[in-house]
Image (cartoon, rainbow, N blue to C red; front, side):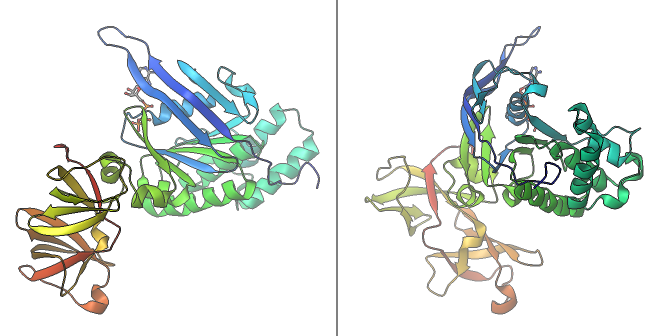
Length: 372
Ligand SMILES: Nc1ncnc2c1ncn2[C@@H]1O[C@H](COP(=O)(O)OP(=O)(O)OP(=O)(O)O)[C@@H](O)[C@H]1O
């Protein structure tokens, strides 16, 4: 293989240890802890996404890995190199921005070639390498166009080509798809994941969009107030949220008030509006009989059953094409139930009384917190 062919890289992990960022006091304000002593590893060749509400510290974390901000405490390693305070251009990372940040006066080819020329690569090698990457990104036919003559999606592909052509150790994405319309976002996120996996580049991605995060990530990191609430595969985060914040932030969840009526090593039995439900006892929290708890249920885990544990009346029905969402009143609380089987099993109407059961092992309990 020549150096101009596209390689699947030997990737490097990124390790952040005890990383924090405290922005200094400004006039009239107290100092602000944007990132709060986090530990996080991005495994070699993997895609990790930072997800969380506005202001939770996602961008600041990304910028510390890029070298645009220096941490207040902690360290950042890329492979075997400690880069905590290394200048951005010396740490072998590339960043893809929401704004594309292409050079308007250069063609697509020249934009992608720029970083290689700066590195002093010979002209012939540059030609071959850029041609390979444009081919991989399905951009060859646009090579002589100016960025202004491309669509948003095409411009973002050029930005990605420019970021990966220099074979950086780490690729950083700062909400790269935010400017694209919904359909193009879906297409582009698939493209982006394909390229990241094809080139095996260790990547850190910041987004507000949880579906996007689930679709492209090996690991999703849920941040809140500068802390990591949970890091795990998309499935772990969705199916086994560690706390109320994660359960509430990812997907839909009912937070139902209930009381503990029995606790064994394996099972916590709760009383939900007079109905008794068994829940796997996997929580770190210790519960006692009489404790008030939140019982958290995902809407798609409920199903109608003649002998269902919980009886209620439908008060609202909404059609979403692939499922129907029912709001079911259970005495003083509402269970939201999404029925994906209605095209086979039939439809219920408002005021119908139904019995619901829930898929075993899918309910969670958390300590009662008036915020939910
Ligand atoms: N240069 C700065 N000086 C002072 N405070 C800052 C600075 N940059 C960010 N912050 C604050 O740090 C906190 C975290 O900001 P950050 O941009 O990392 O959040 P975010 O999760 O990326 O938010 P968003 O999703 O809105 O982009 C915010 O409260 C923000 O106001």
